[in-house]
Amino acid sequence: MRLKVPDLVPIRLAMVAATNFREMALKEMPSISPMAMRLIGKLARVDVDVTEVSHLIERDVLLCSQILKSINSARYARRTQVTRVSDAVVLLGLARLRRLALGLSVSNLFKRLKTASGWSPLRFNFHSAAVAVMAEALADSMPAANGQGALVAALLHDVGKYAIAVNLHREYELIIDLWSSSGKPVDECESEILGFDHAELSGIMLARWDLPVSLQQGVFYHHRPEAAPPDPTNEGKVPLCRLLNVADRFVRYLGIDIEPATRIGVPAYSLEFPGFEVNEVEILARFQSEYSELSEAFR
Image (cartoon, rainbow, N blue to C red; front, side):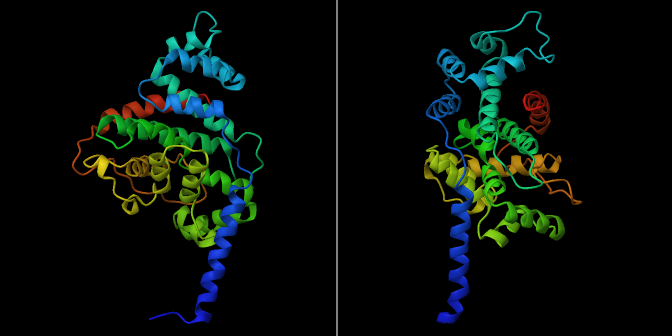
């Protein structure tokens, strides 16, 4: 049955409103500098050139000072002060450096942005770091499509929420009110008020930053992995969006969430992937160790 013209009016109005909200949400978000893009691109690869990465970090004054501050903290109990990034790379090891440099680079993108009431940059950093650690641990434990990009995709999977909090203050507060009172998932509340959710917005932002299409799609579908288009080139592997979905649900189960803790109840989680064996004990031990280390850098 075809809709009559009067019936189409509210649908068209809703589509226009969603388009307007989408453009407003993207209006004031920062662009990634060419140097930061090079660093993210280098660290997203498995075969990292340590010397080249060290030089890139040294050219970013803020990131360089943050990494040196981290390695000279009480956690590492160094007898002598570390003053060169190249030494920090050797002492930290490549895996630690990737997590620390990428986590801090993403966090630094959003400094000094005015956000809506109730938004917490610290909660955003902690949640992003936790999902990144879990997603990378899962990617390393099974055949994963685009697994080398799991860390970057996880750190950026919720940047759409940041965009809403920065550019749509009133709407963000309405979303949180609805989320708190209704018991609905936050992405459903966003769709109800804006006509789209943060996952879609995150995917668009990664596209505007010219990050790989595989990461864009992984982020875009991280709440709806079943809707992701099939990828024949990665048949037999766990899709990146599925990894992000499982990691995100697990982290929210732990209570490490972006939204304020204003309602009772946590989402169920499972680290099971049909057709693949997952050593949950090892993954949880790795998560606890690596998340503790990375989250400390944000304090």
